[in-house]
Length: 388
Image (cartoon, rainbow, N blue to C red; front, top):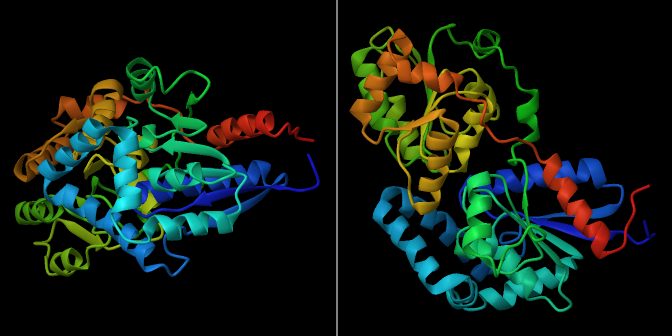
């Protein structure tokens, strides 16, 4: 390696928590394995400058996620419009036209970071990196099962972890993707997931729960969906289970759930966020939630999944992977039917549930290290580097 270390920038973007989680996974793995060769820069890109336009944009991204989940038709229409206008027109409109000074401030900050390489898990930061002069080496990891229009914007290296999405991109967009600039990699997941206890009895004891059938309900980072209805029905039926409800950034939901009182048999644990959420997922027998990138965590822990809704085409294709390809998930979009399935699952009367428990042989690989390796390979060729 040369004496001057190349700057590899990892910009974090909040637009649902799947993008942040994936970025952290890749940055941690790259720094751990190759940090001695590079200057690693973690950037809270849209927050750290104080730019009003950049802050408004990231807030808009978060609000869009909330709207997708609250009004599913809006989510599907939004993605359809992006696909209709294509990656270049859609990207230019969003990244340059939404807010005054957004492009100017974002480009100024990207220049301040002085990157030799920018690794993005959200298309926004890749757009600005691509417009720098001189241009850094640009990398994008798509955290979904499909590379939607914005993830098809030009960059030097695209990565995706779902085989169906990889094959679809090569087949449908041959002018954009080939086997050199698109790589199939493991699914990015938090490093701590590999160190979480897998024995459910041990975990439940640690978490202060009875050692019995445990259900966790998580409707994404903003807690919008069937959580409240499911919890009400489970408690009304007084099912003899542990019920964990994670509300995310939805304090109003947490306040309402705190008012629910068990009749005696249901042990109820409502949370906003908790640091050890991976332990609660691993301790669970069944996971219910929307089909965002968050369902990769129960899949990793071999916890069967009930997809309670898909907010847009992107999430529909994520669900399709686990429902049709892996087989560890089913779709139930009605709270009453969700609770009926919970009842059949814990009583042992559901053949579907038993099949879901066994359907793990087609799961994709997990972990950030394989992603870090692909990035290092490309940087080694681009900058003529050799690891000592």
